[in-house]
Amino acid sequence: MKRFWAALGFMGWAAAPAQAETCETLSYNGTGYTLCHVDLTQDRLELFLYDADGKPHGYFNTLNTALKKRGAQLGFAMNAGMYHDTRAPVGYYLENGKEYQQVISSDGPGNFGLLPNGVLCLRDGRADVIETKAFLRDAPDCRSATQSGPMLVIDGKMHPRFLKDGTSRYIRNGVGTSADGKRAVFAISNETVNFYDFALLFRDHLKLPNALYFDGNISRMRAPDLGRNDLGFSALGPIIGVVKLDAP
Image (cartoon, rainbow, N blue to C red; front, top):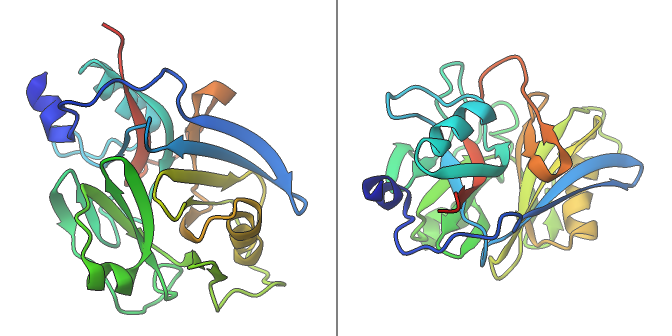
């Protein structure tokens, strides 16, 4: 058991309150969303991809079952970045100090290559969305990290390529972080939305200076306090979630 918590960076970490993270549904500019607010001073955010046998967890329930065998449980969770058919991450992926994919800084096809893209960096007590070139320049000491794209909001400004009347509309999900790294807000649209309107949610409603797009169409969320646990038809790649220690 101690080896498991050490591998996840849990040694010396006190258990969080049972419902530390809070989730809600709301409508903003005519689009419905589900949001989960994570307080990094109380909640333990972790990234997950492969199980002990090297197979992708793939689903929230599968990951939760694995955690329960080790005296923990999954709270809020969401898919956390783009991945290949093998479930291997498209961009940079670091999980508790083990690097699975290097940073990709060049532009390219698809949403991931629509620069600027960015990295969600997890450190003890904080989480930060960082634009990729700034991430490479500053080289923060992340415990875990996942790269995705495009950035939705960069230092308080919208991604320059987004169009107000953009016609590409999907169920989308992403994350924004506060300037001090103490607060992360994860959002999924409950109906189709374009990039511009999704970015407005983070910049104007949530007032978060940096926000990162995770994915569209296959976006899923687990929000236990709302009774939500999206299953989907196919396995996911990287998953991010709040991990709680079971009470003794």
